[in-house]
Image (cartoon, rainbow, N blue to C red):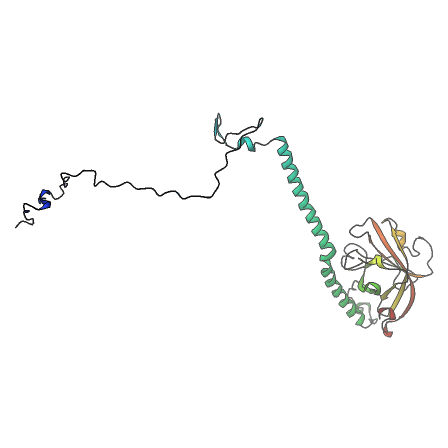
Length: 312
């Protein structure tokens, strides 16, 4: 039985032909009496542009007379295409000089910062290191002084063979609230962490000149220039306290070594007074001068009697 029925005579769709099973994809013809474009698809209607309050783009500036306009497009040369900005970036003698000066300036600034950091380390950074070494020297000196005096054995082989410690005395400056262990020797190695005793000078309390050198850093003789005449400088040995009073402050050249002579400033003269001399670099941060502090022995007392009044 057929799937389609025959249309009636008054059926409005009677004009549509029957699609046979053999041609299921036959195109439906245009309905007679109608415009064949009437059912065509309408084109897409673009939306109306939104109104914008932004100002219109400014017109490109007009070059003034004498100005050079560089084309912003590649230019072909024998060696290939030239950069669109090559005319603007081409180095000149002036630009090379400016670049060199700028680079040199940066190098100088970097070197300056390094020098300042090194100076800061030398002034402040070594304080903790020197403090640690001073603590160690002070402990060694205390142990040495607490040991009983060695007795002479029956034979030379029985004598003590222990090497002596480098500390020889303690130095106090009450006015500066400072104290140090003094070591033997004034080489750079000797006085790296402590004031050093000039080996050829007198011992503490002796007639002559007990001379001591120290670096001008914050841990050692940094404030030595603050001393005035009459200020006390105290030296402690194993058995005695020696109290000196400042008598003179001088600034001399490094070559004026007579300041540590037995009679300061008079080489060859015979001493009659017990003196103390402190030497350090001057000014701070430099060493082309020497700051000299001379002091005379005021009094002494046995260590067993306790600290002198100057130390509180």
